[in-house]
Length: 395
Ligand code: ADP
Ligand code: MG
Image (cartoon, rainbow, N blue to C red):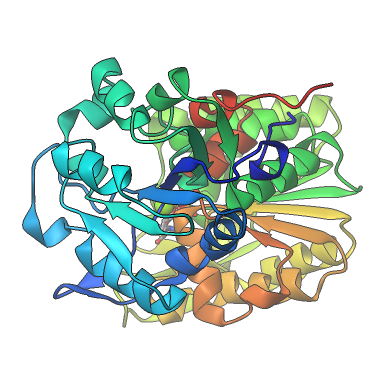
C-alpha cells in the first residue's frame, strides 16, 4: 500500500490544504494536552521549508454539525502560533467567505487554521459541494490526520476527488508501520487483545488470527471466551450472545495452529468500583457474586514470557479496568513487558494508548498509533477511505 507523501509531490510555493487531527483535550477553553498538535509539526515545518502556504483544517469534539462556540479551534491557532513562533491566521469559518479571503492573501511559509470542520453537517455527510468548496482553498491536499482516515468525510475523502492527495509524515508513518506489521511481521507474531467487547472486534480477531502465531486475550473480552470454554464467570461482564462466536473462533484458531492464551487467573471484586475489595482467584474459582476486573499474576507471567520471545507484538485493548488503579496492575505489568521486549511493539486503541501513557513508558514502545478506530480498522484488514483516496506511488 504505497501512497505518495508530501515528499513525492512538488509543493513549492503551493497552497496546501492539510487535514490534521487537532482534536485535543480542552478544559474551560484551555488546551490540557497539546501532543496532537506537536505530532504534526514536522509536516508543517517541511511544507514551510518548501515555501508552501499551509492551510490547516481539523475537527474538535462532537459539535454534530452545529456551531458550538466552546468547540471553536481558535485556542488551537493561538497555541500553534506559540509553538511555531509565528502568527497563525485563524479563519472563523471552514470553506466560507472568511476562509477564502484569508487563504487568497497568504504569503509563502504562512500558516492558517480554519474553524472546526464539524460545525458543518456536510462534513460527516461527505457532501460533494462542501468538499469541492474546501478543495477550492488549496492546490494540493495532504492527509496528516490518520485518526480520522477510517471515516469517509468531506475533509478526509470527499476533498480528494478535487485535488491531488498525499500523506503528511504522521499518516505516512502510520501506514508504513501498520502495513509492514501486518504484511511482514518478524516471527513469532504475538497479538494481545483486550478491552470491553468481543462484538466490536470480531473482524479484527479473525483477520489477526490469519497472521499471528499467538493470541493473548485479556480484559472483558476474555470473559466471553472463558464462558465459551465452560467456565463460570460469576457476575463478570459476558456477552452471552457472542459466546457461540467465541467458541467458533477458538476452534478455528486450533485448526490453523494459532496458540490462544486465555487468563489463568483473575482479579475479582464484588462491585465495579475504584475502591472495591479485590482478590486473585484461579479461572475455575470465580465466586458466584464476584466479577473479573483484571488479569491475575499467573496470567501476567504467562503473557510476559510469550511477549519476551516475540518478534512482533500488536496490542489492542486494555487487559483490565485500567481506569481504576487497583485493576490497572495487569495492564501496567504488560506495558512493562512489551517495553522490555526485544520485539517491535505496535499499540493501537484509544483506551490502551491512554493506559500506556499513564505508565510513562511510551518512549520505549516502537509505535503507538494516533488513531484508535483507524488503527483497529487497519488491523482488521479494512480499507480506510482516507488512505485509499491518496495517490498511489508509481510502481
Ligand atoms: P481500546 O479503546 O483500547 O480499543 P476498548 O474500548 O475496547 O479498548 O475497551 C476499553 C474498556 O474496556 C475500558 O473502559 C476498560 O475499563 C474496559 N475493560 C477492560 N477489562 C474489563 C473487565 N474485565 N471488565 C469490565 N471492563 C473492562
Ligand atoms: Mg476504547
